[in-house]
Image (cartoon, rainbow, N blue to C red; front, side, top):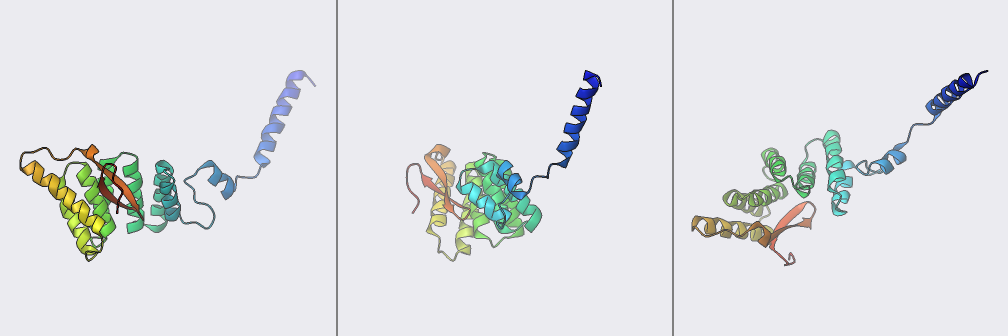
Length: 191
């Protein structure tokens, strides 16, 4: 057999053996992609864990998977919007939260997060309305949402009075937990 024929046979054998290798299982796929939830963990729960770890891009993928598996639930929409917001896509996050409010008008978390994105976009009146609606839905139990409404009202009044509304950097939009965001003055801890 010639050297070229032996090389060809070796290449064909290697290709044939490669086809016999087992397909990667769920563990191998999960290791390759952090967006894939581990065995026994739902995609939405996995997305929340990824957000808590600061991994917005894999969280976004996990919430997209949750959307395909569970549908547009308030939890999935909130997670999808928060992950999008963390990636700096404020307008896209606003659309997600607005769709959530349209589907679930009685969900305080979606309304609050829509308010936070509207505030970030400079729509202080719209933000205030969403915060007030969210606060009413909690029967007044969420002082942090009331604080968001007060901040938005101050910004709205400043704009109407011809004064400069607070610059965005004066406030931090911080995660409170469970997908809820509040606004605090820079450096203050949420109460």
